Amino acid sequence: MLRNGAKVYVVNGKTFNNFGAALDYNRKINRSPQVRRTTKRPTRRPTGRPTRRPTRLPTISPGRRTTRRPILGRTTRRPGPVVTPPRQTSAPTVTTTQNPIAILKRDILNEVNNYRARHHVPRLQISPELEKAAQKDADEMARQKMVILDPTMPSGQNVISTAGFPKNVVEQWYKTIDKFDFANKKVKGDNVFFVNLVWKSTTHMGCGVAATDDKQTYYISCRFDPKGEVFDDQKVQDNVLNV
Image (tube, rainbow, N blue to C red; front, side, top):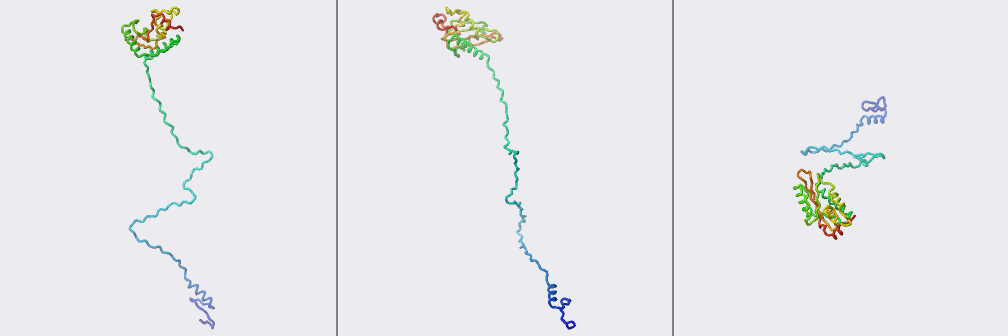
């Protein structure tokens, strides 16, 4: 376009004296804004199943533990296993009751052997047969309430009665040693109980104990075997020894 004989350039109603300025302005107004391209996600077809929402797992950083252990210092002891002590139970109480008659018979045997040891003769053993025979003697004495001595029986015999439960029975028999003369060694009726206790050849004995119905009097009979040959002077010399 010419104005007053000079070239002018009009762009969108605006006048420019040179072409370069008009061109720049034209580019400027015609420059369209840049449009960012977007990527369209593909549309899933419906499958008829309910859509599960993905479970989100916790993110664990490598090299780190999810559970922290307590830091143990020098004064902190590592906890040990809990030990439960066994339950203590008290042992049942057992009450034992010994037969006093059995204890008495045992004590008589021990005392007889103690006296025999003084006279350097062997100990005696219990004979069940002699015990049965002696028990019959004791029962008969308790029935008749009297002491019965039978010198004709095949075994030696010592008898005694006591008021109340017997004590020191063997000691009473042994005291008849006072009636025995070791110089002459003669057996008489008042020392035969001592002779039966210490007769060397005797090996066994057995005792029986019985009481009256009111338990006021006890009777004891003890049998000895082999029986001492008290009427043979030489046998008495050989079998009745001094302490």
